[in-house]
Image (tube, rainbow, N blue to C red; front, side):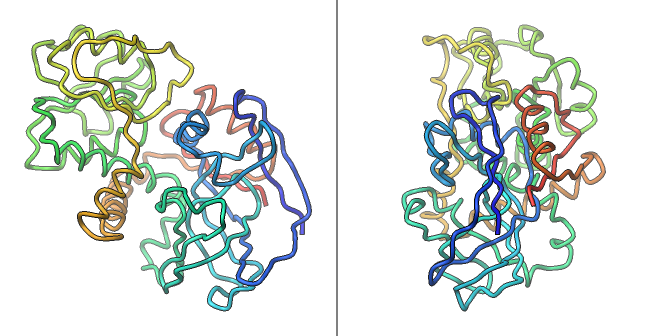
Length: 360
């Protein structure tokens, strides 16, 4: 059996290559899955940009200066030396950009298992869990593409929403979300907009070309472009949630709102190649939001698995609400994967499109 993998140069993300090699024989306890399809979003670009800092390259190691970007997708068990996971099972979870993945299942239940491969032992538990889909309800089975494209992003939206509420919005009267067209931003805005107990205004920051799309989502109280930050009332206590990674945008927000910027939450990197933010800024200190840490915190407080259940419940509702607004495309093969990855890196994929890919 031949394995196909998509490798990315870790310090030069536009340098990529397709690597093929023969699959090794399984040992007792291992399972090999064929990755039927996976989603590719700006979130995966973020994984690559911060891969060394946050350990994302460690999940699916490559060689030397190369790495394999993690993605969310569906796979089928095609070889098994684990009696509890037979050939034919369909699995949803965290995969490499590849045709196959070999795992060492443990803590196996009817619903889930974890990969106990030694190199993943110290990595966030959230990403090591795989879901067995055989007993999923029919409506969930009908949302496979959305589950790959949207659920992980909206789950992050949920824990940011939970973080803001848990901290009483840090005293802010409005939430400004940068890169408002991104799916994680939309999910957060949706949760805030539909929560009757949230009185804060929700403002979306976006580029001129995305204003119509963002307005059409119907969950922002106001939409402004990046060059219109100065038109926002600087006296209003504000929380910033930045999905863009654009240092210039963050700097402008801090300088405009100064001490009225009550929280500065850095989440995403949709504009990863833009200027760095200034080192010394007025207002709240910018802090990086790491979703797995929030899941882990709530797991300790609410019990294992409760946060994921709540997050994916919210994700399903949000996904249903935008059905038809995202054009989902399916492509297969190394050339298609390469072109799609470079399009995302170069910010050429419109927010209304969802990319589903396969290397089988």
